[in-house]
Amino acid sequence: MIRPSVLLFALVISAPALYRYVVDQIDVTAVLIRFLIAVPVAAILLAALRFVTAGYGTTEEAPAATVVTPSPLGTSQETSQEAEKPA
Image: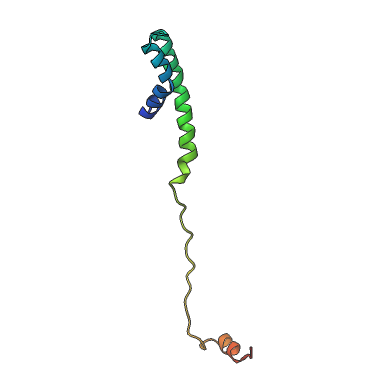
């Protein structure tokens, strides 16, 4: 299924040919051929744009936080030995 944005962009791309048809410089078949060529070109360009900008709206999951259990000072033997050491 062709996206409406692709058709709109193809119309914008082929707008100079449409203008030349309005002022009677080229035939309607040339305008249609240019539009039909512009549709796959617009689809490829918009697909590339979507591919490049796809990652900008997403955020990565934050890593799980490390659980720390606090203990009061002086309850373990290591902390009491560290407190006795001179600085």
